[in-house]
Image (cartoon, rainbow, N blue to C red; front, side, top):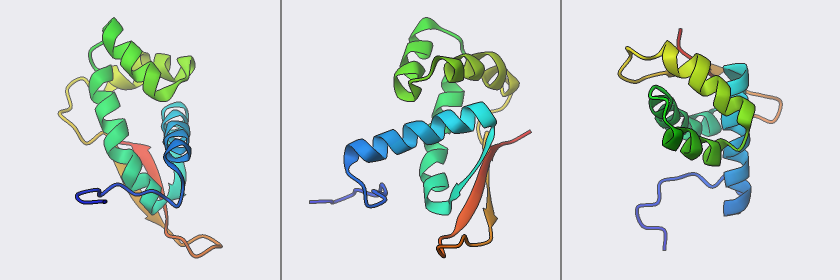
Amino acid sequence: MAHANKKRSFGRTHDQKVALMKSLLRSLVIHERISTTDAKARELRPMIEKMVTRAKTDTVANRRLIASRIGDADAVKKLFTAIGPRYKGRAGGYTRIVKRPTGPTGRKMAYIAFVD
């Protein structure tokens, strides 16, 4: 039963969805702005917000936890050296979702980017 299960599955198995989210997280950290569907951006937002909050305090435990969730050493390094310190004085709301016109397949598209 799927009681109280509000997460989106995107028509994928669990492993495929985890891989998709890892890829989107990595891309967002590296490029700081990505274009994706609106649903994927809304699913990605809480994940990246929690990671940036962890990256504000640079500890070994936080680095290992984020490395296990992203799986890319360069992205982890950028998150802790560039993105985390940028939002040191900010309590939350590190990302912004901006809607775009629908794509060629008719899906609602959006940008997700870090706030300046």
